[in-house]
Image (cartoon, rainbow, N blue to C red; front, side, top):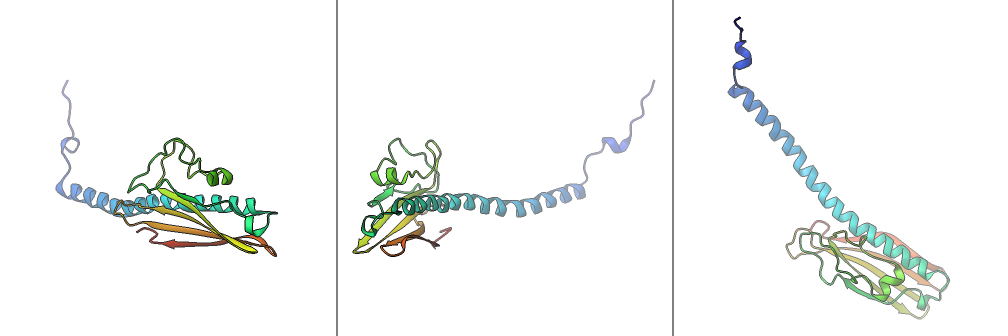
Length: 174
């Protein structure tokens, strides 16, 4: 018995069909690549903003019912001491055991999870009033230039502790 073969099922793609397919793929890539890059930066930025929010909220909670001059815990140095350069890194055990981080119950991320920012807590105190600046520093693209995010809070003897919800940002995407 003879089989009939359909010629159209045996032919390959024409050069026009290939050109159309390539142009469609190029269009999709032109749309998808910038979107993916924005999402990657956004995920880094969420780390900084949510970390500062948690740290600042804990500092305000610690200050409730205390005299303004003793409202906030002492300073905590930049932890880790240098922000990762263009990558995310996992902290070594003990990184967040400074007394201030312990009082604030703060870690940048859960243990074993890589992160891209270093954090610091800087309080100041004068008679009847104290304040703090919570900072996050990151070098997202590894060029040595840092992104800086800050949140602030105050406490005085008349109003108590107040968190300033305004976020200071310098070189957001550096």
